[in-house]
Length: 185
Image (cartoon, rainbow, N blue to C red):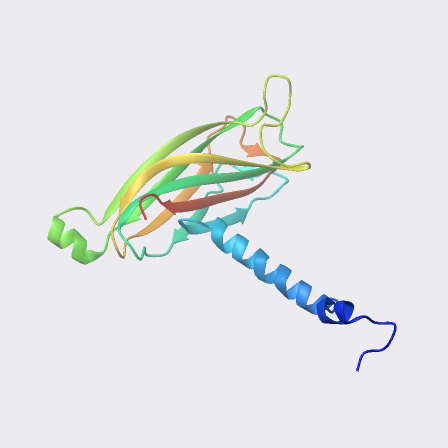
């Protein structure tokens, strides 16, 4: 029964207040969907830390990319994070991709089981006015394209990255990363 102070219209169309738990669940679910959608064709993404005190020339950063589930063209991208203590406007990096074909592929196609693709990246980090070209405030993120590679089902990649600067120890580089995207899904 309706009270005299509540009209039929107010009672019929009045919505209960949403619970805070329901709002948080919706926010979590929508954030999860957003990040799942943003990965796109990314099949591998990993970063390794270097010593902020200095990345030595002979300290090679390595990545072991697991076997690919699908064949196709894959685009590699190098990620670099630096802070304000990095003393130069740029950095030269060597990225060596060792593509390891499956033994069956090597036999049937009469190709070597390991193919080495080496790229020298000249990365501009700071412009002529001294402004960082990367994104961030105290740490700056940079992304640089590396050569594309054709991979077959079951192929894996072993990636090595090192710097090729005249200075033996580079301070201020915090992380090196590698990503692979499938070009033709």
